[in-house]
Image 1 (cartoon, rainbow, N blue to C red):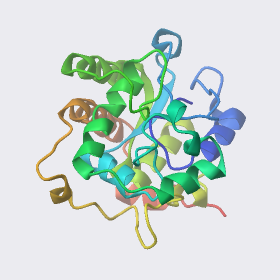
Image 2 (image 1 turned 135 degrees about the vertical axis):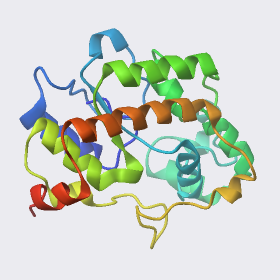
Image 3 (image 1 turned 180 degrees about the horizontal axis):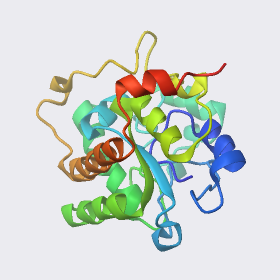
Image 4 (image 1 turned 30 degrees about the horizontal axis):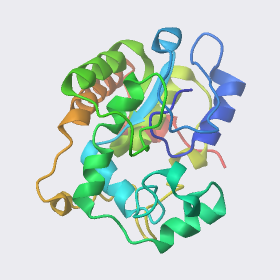
Length: 237
C-alpha cells in the first residue's frame, strides 16, 4: 500500500498482505513510508492514502516534538549529530525549534511532491520545490489512480469506508491515534491556524480538494454514513 500519510502503516500493511493484496491494492513495503510515489504508471489504480488539510498537516509536523527541520538538522548529510537512530532524535530534541513560517515554507507542497516525484522524500528540506502545475498533476493522480482515499479529519468514517470497499473486520487499533503530537492531543482537535499568521499551503490545497471530492463520492457510492458506521464497523480487540 502506498501511504501518503498514515496513523498506523505497519498495521495496515500486515492486514493488506493478509487480506487485500493481489488485484486490489499495491502492497509495497512501508519500511520508509515517507517516500515519493515512484513509478505511478505501475501502481495506478492500486494506490491508497489518507489526506489531511495541508495547514493542519504543517502544524501537526511543527508541534511534534521530534522532526527533521530543527536547527542543525536541515541537511542530514552535513549534520553528524543527526545521524540515524535514537541519537538523531535526541539531537533533534536538543536543538532550537525553527521559526514556524520557515518550517511551513519548507513543508509546503509535501503531498504534491510525494505524488509526483520519482524519488526522494517530502521531508527532505533540500527537495525540489513544486508548482501549481505539479499540484494539478497530483490531483489528477488522486482522482484517477487511487483505489482508496481517506481523509484524516474523517478518520473513523474513512476506516468504515475502507472496510465497506475491501472487506475485513474492523480492529480497535485502526481507530487509535498512535502518534499524538503532544500529551492530551486527540485526533478530533484541530490546531489553531492563526499560528501560521496568514500562511496557507495553496499547493497542497489543490491535492486535498481532489481527495475530498473522491472521498465524498465514495461515501455516497458505498452508502457509508456515521450511522451505518456505528452499526457495521464494531471494532474487535
